Image (cartoon, rainbow, N blue to C red):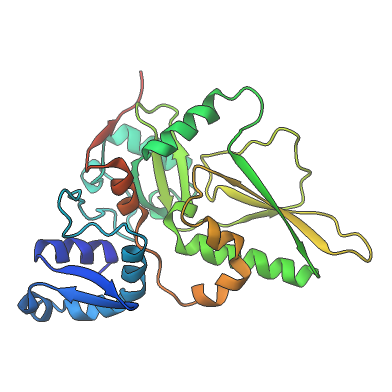
Length: 279
């Protein structure tokens, strides 16, 4: 059972979760916990559930919480159809348009949903910018040697694999409503291309970050610049900045709870969005 399905099941059985002294506390229908094997799934997803609650984004059991359906796109799906999408209404033509833009097509798509309000504002500035993109950020790093720089890139990839939002691309061309698509697999771009004066980034390709390696100078440290787009960097930003320390924690740890729950929280309510091919 995925964490999405687990949260939906807990809500249906009026089982609520809290965290006390770093431990997960379960309250509610005890019979449902034992009869449905939920205790085993709670143990499996315990780290992600604790993180969800501590970040203040756990909604089950809260008055006025958004009724969030489970994700209908299963792993191994080779074709996505309208009834699989639970947070947005799309016709088949719009879905096919999106699939053409994703490497690997439907098999590499984990979820599709609209942009959160803050993301909508950032996208507006991205589209209307006449010179560069004001939301492309950069951070410079220095390493004692190339091996440490390579380890840093590997750590970044671990963070990308764990966080939905870091495997997300943004799409709006040909659609009435801008959408974000969560990829199942997205590889960190590492290159040595010179940095342009006016930084831009293709929002249609995940991850929305790139590590630019600079030519080493004899006797000096190895340097690199991490470029990332603010539309995808929120709660994960600190982990990215401390990726080398975070890597041992991330290795073997289950993926974070789905970003669709944060989307529902920021939207303020569960609402359907619709999009179709523009004429």
